[in-house]
Length: 629
Ligand SMILES: Nc1ncnc2c1ncn2[C@@H]1O[C@H](COP(=O)(O)OP(=O)(O)OP(=O)(O)O)[C@@H](O)[C@H]1O
Ligand SMILES: [Mg+2]
Image 1 (cartoon, helix red, strand yellow):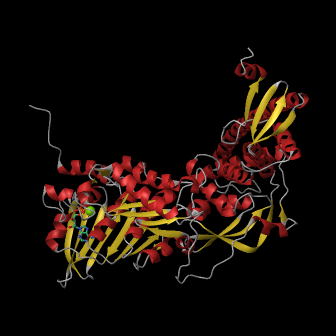
Image 2: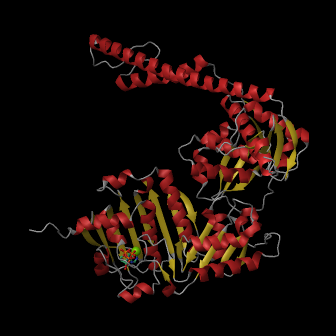
């Protein structure tokens, strides 16, 4: 007998579900697109439990009983009929796979009613099988409730990321869908909190609802959407939104065309804010290359590239920058944004926290926690008298167990102490090494020659020509200084007379608020302020070369990029980057001397990211270049 068998449908559905429903955000995308295909005008999505619970309610066409029953079958679709339709897509859906995949891996309830019927239908589905069917009273439209996503696929459930990460991805998807479907009102509620709410009143209104008025003011219209000026440029590509025939896509070609057209208008490492809507003949694109439908292929890449590049260049060439425009949309009154000079009014620090732990306090603070935890797990103990409160155990047994626990604790404490001592020893050795290195340097007697290109400092040092990157030199010294101050809690902060409002993309708000306490430790007190803004009440006493807004953007970027790292480190790195003098800034010999001197005091010769600070050329190399050797 042969060994190949056709898979039972429930098994094959679970497999295909893995491709269509990878995670809560892809599930929401599928459901939302179904509601959009059903020509809904209002769609409400509620999410809970890290995305394992989703309820989506629309006022679209709805389904009659027959269609509802079949909708959850694999390859059931009302959207295409024959092969040719695949090359002429006008709807989001076309595979007839989403609902069946979702049903295969969760507990689903669907109710639906069409406009011409008085009564609707409701079904419940468990792991792909219909378990109940009844008539229901309902408004026209469809409501789908997903419970316990991945309840029967433990492997996939394990891959669910923490709630804030899933929520971030959900927000990103819904934001993009709401942006392109600007004539549909879309409402996203996460854990009871309204996160996105668009009213469906046109593109510009939707931009304001999603990103705030400031963004719209700094966007100009062009043939294929909107492009932003440098005041709203970003340090990632996250704010380049590309839609082709209403479908959100990632397209390298279009991004490259856009970035190329900005050319020198944006500082290196900055990306434009842009919203691009392209309408192409469905015959010239193929969305069927990936089950997620996120990747598109063009029949003619060069044509698309040129089209975008030319249209953007036409708008931005000849102007120094795209100036912001007046927009007439009723949002609260403008606030003045503060610049660095405004901070100078505050001379005296408001609060100074000055507390450093000594080693024994530190060890105690670390080990105290251990005693308590272990005891808590085993018994209840009155921490003052040392009495065991659990009355059920007889005294002897209790005492014996107590002794055992005491032993365990002692061992753990010893281990922990050992660990801490080795750590301290290691740190001590490192410091000692640094001192030796530094002394070597200081005795070597170097001489500042001057500045090259207002960006590099030239130094002669014992027959070697050294070239220092001035930005990185300063960045490194600030980094060390900040780190030292933060560890010893010597950060002073100042209250802003007028709290500063800054625009933070709603997708990034959680990243910041999760770290609220840490930011406070570092001198930044922040508060939520509407969906797209945060309010900064205090900042550390520190000289920033750029705006606080650009600092926060950098912090977000660092936090996103290095998730495993201590967030304090990310914030310190961002602060030192934004506080450091830049390339192109003219320095006096004295200033250069201080900068280089400070660097050698620290004795670290790479930037906090690991890039080198000094380039060295010895006489030998120079003489070879001159063919003296
Ligand atoms: N919210 C809704 N309102 C009305 N009809 C719906 C809704 N959701 C699904 N349907 C119907 O159920 C069918 C199956 O949906 P499903 O998402 O599985 O497939 P599809 O949208 O046709 O294709 P794809 O798998 O590419 O999404 C749809 O073709 C549509 O007829
Ligand atoms: Mg669909």
